[in-house]
Length: 279
Image 1 (cartoon, helix red, strand yellow):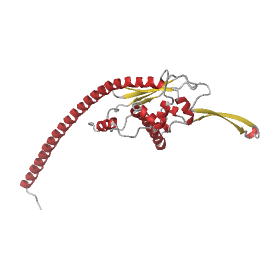
Image 2 (cartoon, helix red, strand yellow):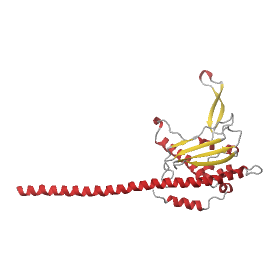
Image 3 (cartoon, one colour):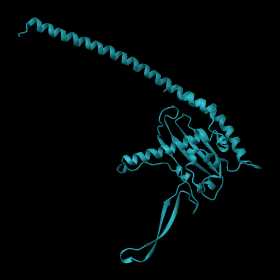
Image 4 (spheres, rainbow, N blue to C red):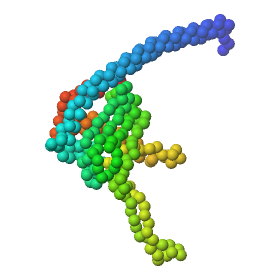
């Protein structure tokens, strides 16, 4: 069927009107989206303000807690009377940390004088410190573990571990708890067949003190799905232990020592409230 000139003109006009309407609709939508983006940007600024105020508030009360912890340390270490096996008992009673302690570690951990945690001023990380009396195992007086966690103050988020820094333990000769030297007799091969030779090698031992040497990323060429999963699990276990120390053992040490933990308390209620913070 032939199309008249008027019909062609009408069709062109109709298409132009549709395009114009679509353009107007897009412009309106873009304007609305921009307003939503402005609201989102304002929310982000409020969140930054909240995190700064929260970090300052936590620092204020950490300073107050610190005085109590120093007094606690004096009681535990007491000049005339002390509390024996305090820290090793508290650590052992907390499953997350206790599961990492080998039997051979106990005597060494019994030399612990104090455990402290210092949060970064901006709330993006923390450092754990273990103070030891002079002992037969290593020369260090303090063992440290530092965590850089940019989103530490944002409850509910998966922790972003920017960096984990351990420390070198200066083991005394023959006292290393993380490794052992194994000597074996082996029969020779080839032209040395029938001859016995002595082979010495170093083997890894289970020990809590491995925790001070954090997991490391392998070379890219060695990375595969299995290695990635193992690394993820290692970092998770490492950080779980750090958080158990920071939020449970250090602030509630006497409860872990006596075995009173497990009952809800005021601090647990506060933690629940903080978990409902703006995200």
